[in-house]
Image (cartoon, rainbow, N blue to C red; front, side, top):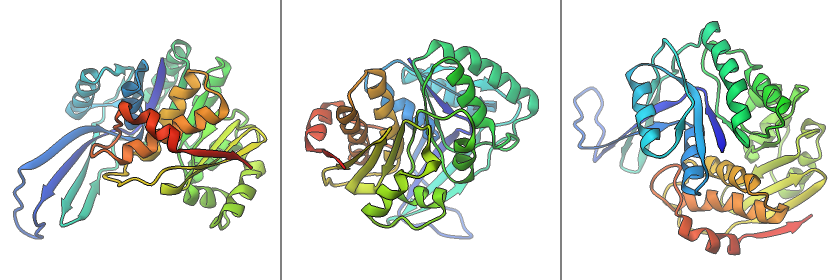
Amino acid sequence: MILTITLNPSVDISYKLEAFNLDTVNRVADVSKTAGGKGLNVSRVIQQLGEDVAASGFLGGSLGQFIRSEISDQGIENFFVSIAGDTRNCIAVIHKGQQTEILETGPTINETEATEFLNKFSEDVQKVDLVTISGSLPKGLDKDFYSQLVEIANQHDTPVLLDTKGELLRHTLRGDSKPFLIKPNQEELADLLGEKVTDDAQIISALQSQTFSGVPWVVVTTGATGAFVKHNQEVYRATTPKVDAVNPVGSGDSVVAGFAAGISRGLTDIELVKYGLSMGVLNAMEATTGSINPENISWCKDQIRVESI
């Protein structure tokens, strides 16, 4: 089983309007409400790949119950911790090809809730093959919270795939316990290193940075063109096929899901890179965020070119 962590999930609400008018009433018939958050996108794709998956994080109030119910319907096991605060809404208003987002910050986690989560995670991590951690921290948690999760997982020899950015990623990488895999995109890589990373040579050079010492896998996605992947001392350039993207949102999360499933299955380096990146391509071809069509996996893998640098 694979465990995904989304510490600050949301109910994602999408309103599709012909026109969006300010300072008046807007009535909308086209509405969708889904369990949202980067880690829950990962969960859905892993489930679509036929792997057993559980999701964890903090949930509270009626919106938290909505998420519990939805993931249960999707075949995702519920490992979430209940909190006193209310889970947040994230609203997207889509109109004339534009998208206006209203994102709540979410609940504040108190010390008792944080301790309860760490204790439960210590138990849960022993039941699973690997863990994915995605996104940012909710209010109330110290910036070393991810470092604590990685340390607990490593104590039980459970690999952690970490997908976060900025100071949170930087702080976690400085810790003694390292994640098994990280997945910054090109922009996040530049921000992490504090330098420009604009071409292939700079990406390859950046991958040799001491920042990544002790991290077995570093996956740097470069949008529609593919990725650069470092496994220990080996560096690969991967080129993905051009497709008509319907909705690229969630493709990074889908890549994490692909690598998680592939590692769980013991795939070799090049097969793992192809498998993981395929999920990002396939997600972009679907209208629903965090969704792939498994029937297209073989086709997509065959289209990806991986070369050792």
